[in-house]
Amino acid sequence: MLNTGKRLDAAGPSALALFRIVVSLLFACHGASTVLGLFGGPEGGRPPVGAWPGWWAGLIQLVGGVVVLLGIGEVGTRIAAVVSSGSMAYAYFTVHQEHALWPIQNGGEPSVMFCWSFLLIAIVGTGTWTLPWTAKRQWRTPPADRTPGAETS
Image (cartoon, rainbow, N blue to C red; front, side, top):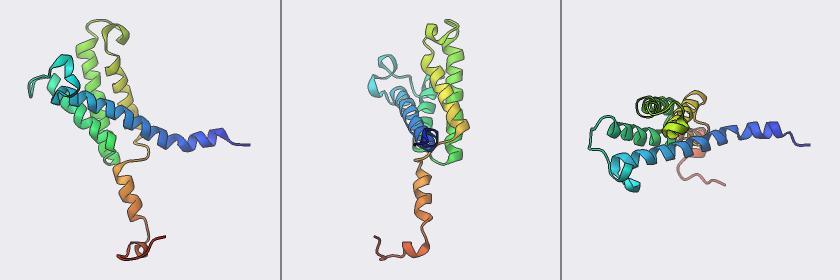
């Protein structure tokens, strides 16, 4: 008989990595839309360079999204996730909440979802499939296996 709990637990790091990759890709796309005007830009345009808070929020989204997406170091990814989470909390409370109490009423659902998603990533970690993971794996092989010209099977 298969132990489903153990199999699901074993899939946890990969599931977390997929969650991190999807959330941060969507976040980076929002940033690219705002800062670079890709995908039509926000409301068909983009804010002037340096405009507060729109352009800076877009820059945080773009850079934070890429750093978390790639998983550039456990600490770097967590810091980027905290900054990204905080920027979305700021966006919710300064832009959306003044219109209505609930996110469903004030259009703040994306801000709330990104805020809590990045907070989860900051607390739980990156999962697998980060850039340093591949480098660490390469350097864990015994020195004899890394000899130039050595045959691998």
